[in-house]
Image (cartoon, rainbow, N blue to C red; front, side, top):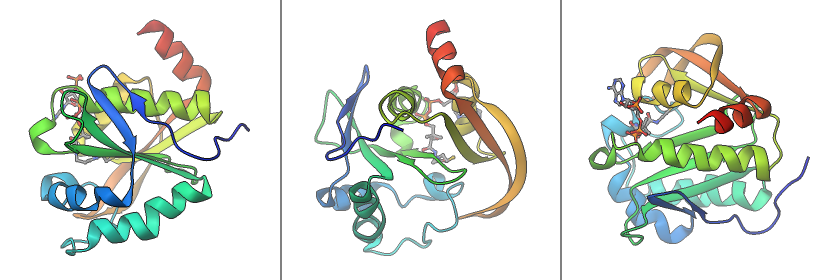
Length: 188
Ligand SMILES: CC(C)(COP(=O)(O)OP(=O)(O)OC[C@H]1O[C@@H](n2cnc3c(N)ncnc32)[C@H](O)[C@@H]1OP(=O)(O)O)[C@@H](O)C(=O)NCCC(=O)NCCS
């Protein structure tokens, strides 16, 4: 399988610049991410209440080591019109059954921005990293996130109960193959 080694590229969408996370992003993540609306359907390993050093700890202990190992890819979302402002994050992980995660600040939701970001990193997953399949668990009640999966041609392959910051919830495991992604991209 082809692997990208070295630096992770900045990805561009119509309205967003996706920039690889750095330690310098800690204050902006700390100021934006810890909101109930954002975390309630995130996996329970996200600490809650969010500690004052939560963003820096995540960057130092999780994201940056994962990026250095070459099995995680993390980007900040920034409006192209205002690239100094971090409005969300999106990640890919080469781990079994849980390959993509994302969040965007409430003020920026509902404008199709995460659909753009998700398409860009999904393209990266299949076409740059050469992966054959993408799996993502989502709480059934996370309607906005499920909608993004539905609209990108994903399928539910399994349901199970998973632990989220807001407690255990029924979850669906969504799947997308490289062939399905290419067919979807062609048709959209
Ligand atoms: C999930 C999330 C990233 C979506 O971001 P977004 O930029 O608002 O998403 P988009 O605007 O690209 O698309 C959202 C879709 O869900 C729909 N949607 C939004 N809120 C909804 C709701 N409460 N009920 C049903 N559908 C909803 C939108 O209409 C849109 O569908 P459409 O394209 O068919 O119109 C954002 O809500 C978020 O950060 N949530 C908290 C973190 C999280 O749960 N992450 C995912 C974990 S699996």
